[in-house]
Image 1 (cartoon, helix red, strand yellow):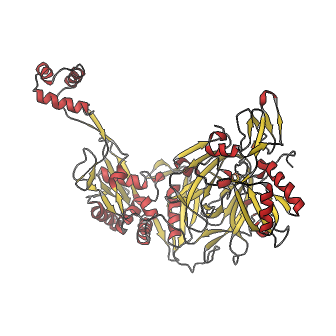
Image 2: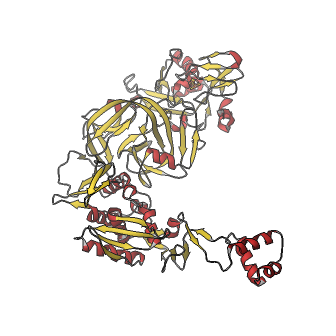
Image 3: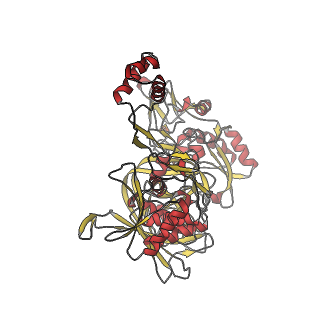
Length: 628
Ligand code: SF4
Ligand code: SF4
């Protein structure tokens, strides 16, 4: 769809004139060479930037408006050394040719209101997508992410695009490496006395510290769980016992379709007409089959699945320290097993060592207290198990925290929980599957990357700096003489509850400053991601503060219908007058990529230079010899 098909595109199309940086080709096609894309544009279409378009063989280019206008001290500009102390009037238009490489790889951990996730998962979770030849944009319904300040800010959208070129790997102490394009700016400092500032990845050195905010926000804590909503997606298929054989039910259905009465049908099959009416009603409601499929049954304040024995579990569960502890034990030692003989039956299992009788009893007591579920102790050859054959309880834990070890995650209600629940969860997790050292060091291991990064995030939330390490495994191990397959990686999270323990990270009032121990550059060809975060234009990448493109509003207005940056009609002489009125000595074409609006910049400069103003042009690159 050409941009001119959108209301904003139509408005912008009225503020254009014929371009200079293009050539006419046969069949009314044009070749634009304002930027390195060198778009070949057929009539009625626009270029990658969406603001230059072919109108019957003539390239129309933006003219006569501004999408952004700002007066700044020159020190805020990349050419801060040009006229020290001077003011610069910056102007920009709309559109973007999408060739900056301000992006991270898809495996980079970012932190959203639902906890740590990866860029690619965040992109995939967005409600709405828009595919462009140059990039894909994903827009969430209502999501927030943690910004560099540690606060939650609204996420405008996530960008994914193909990138071929150099990629910088930043290797910090304590935390996994992050990979980004050389121009991406991350917050760093070489002097712990000075606040971290955005520095391009390619300019970082092992003298730099990266910054992690010390105080991080969380979404509003849930006071209780809606169990029916959590189990809603699970359906069970079960057999229905009928007095009537299937042939007679089919006969009733076909006779009903022919319009026969219940009395007539009953006389054929030897049944009372009222019984036939009852069967017809069930068939009409889709209940005439030998099996039925349905979700959980919520009644009398409880939730259970069809065929589940005994009472259901409470429909509403308070998110208190007891439930948090139970979830902590589950993340450490629990799993959900489906019965081989009864496929609708799920068992909630916890496995402890033979010595951990006290822990096993505590889990039994918590299951009874939180869910009203009776669990039994099971003595196995190598473990002491706690087993609850209650499908609703088992599936609730699976929905909250994952079923298998490699799929475990910190439950969402814990990600946003208050400090008491956080500590209860972590204490239980560590008691089940971690270790506390006399030095105050605490360590846990897991084969789930999502659980590891979730625990690391909780550690940050309780005011400690986590370390997160990834170790490859041998792939196979031996248990009780049996060869078993291992997850390819094991993840360890380590933290210190004793702040007197000396680590090489520095704690300032606002940040943990983590030393960079290495920077590598490699060739890359693949997808990269970036996102726009409102207000701060920053986010956390691998827990480290990073900046995003500040120009979303001006660069993406034609792609993102919610990007609000209405163009303001303005002539070059008005811009010059404004510069004089506000004492600016410099006018600069910037914000979105100015290459795509070069003719407009030249029109402004032609009026500004004779008036004694210094003219500048801030480009991300991707220029052509013609435009230069
Ligand atoms: S400015 Fe670049 S992206 Fe836009 S039409 Fe011209 S060549 Fe294509
Ligand atoms: S200006 Fe912003 S949106 Fe456009 S390519 Fe650069 S980083 Fe991406």
